Image (tube, rainbow, N blue to C red):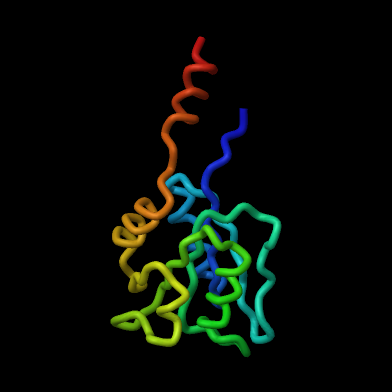
Amino acid sequence: MTLACPKVLIVDDDPSHLEIYGLLMQQAGYESVPALVKFAGAEIPRDEPIGLVLLDYKLHSLKTSAEFAQELGVLFPDAPIVVLSDLWSLPVDIAPFVTEFVRKGQPAKLLQVVARLLPVSEEPQKREIEENAP
């Protein structure tokens, strides 16, 4: 039996950040879906059932993070958008389009926010363990 865990879309222009946040999400029980932002934009997986979006604020792209947030809100209307940034507070331009703001370098706080917005169900894992028990 394959478990479907909640999917977190990670949108960033730094491949190392995609990897780091992806590992953090996987360790917490989520499936990470990376979307690398390039100068001309990003390939956003439109056919994935995304439960939450992590969006970097400072992107080296023709599109601003606020524009990405608007697009992501249309593509995944039920998915909360969490902005990650090294800034001290949520910038005004993106505030109307996002649910939460977390400063980079605070993995414990990020995991708390993600767990509150996208809880992982323990029940399917428990059932799988019981089904596979000798």
